[in-house]
Length: 137
Image (cartoon, rainbow, N blue to C red):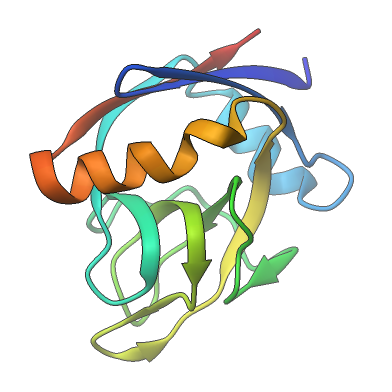
């Protein structure tokens, strides 16, 4: 199972796991599918939405990590100097927290529906938290 369906707000996106680049992160995330939560707009990083996860420990280290995810890339910050989180970039992102620059594991890439990403981001900014569901396709 490498293909995913991501529903965020009123939008549906096709996606894929980046299993060759982030095998451990993908493996542990497969175990929590289907994954339901809410996204809120980022505070420090630019054009992205995120799922704050507090001290939740997925038990993974850095792999395929980046501070600059491209639009449509989903990263998982495994925790450390800031709280654990999942971030979806919809525009320019320089991933950071009030503690400074962070890096997250790029483990999912959206493959369709990218034309709706900016609208999802601005909707989340102006209208508040939006539901998100990540499931096998």
